Image 1 (cartoon, rainbow, N blue to C red):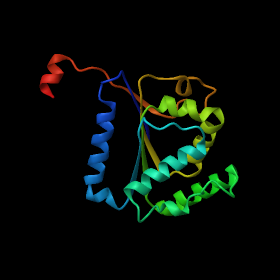
Image 2: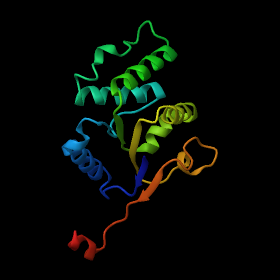
Image 3: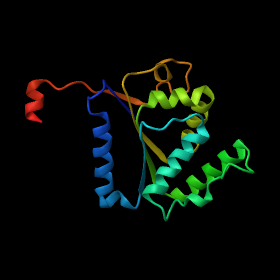
Image 4: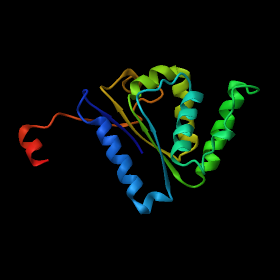
Length: 172
């Protein structure tokens, strides 16, 4: 349910996510049971609320009838805790019985932006609401994954992507 692909720049991590997204979108057996949110590397995430908003906005762009933007907090009148509860409720209610596949580029940068508190909130959300699968990328393993005291230690199945040999490239 939780996969981290890591390897150097240019190894094909983003291409893999694009192919995965395309294939699951084209699979009719999955179309009614799966919703995909791709968090590209261009945006920053500074809190768990920001992360959920990014996910919801990606879903709204892909599935506008199911995830309307008008239900999100507008920044006024909501405290951060209330806004977080509202976004969580909207996301979970609109997913219904479907699985959410979140594709995350540069997971190390997302973890850095979340900080320890945001990472703990995300981990708790994933455990309390088992509707999400994650496929993430990073250039390398990072402390958020490798240090025992961190919330996501041992959480992901990590797969290192290595350059192809000449023979492997020819076969491919």
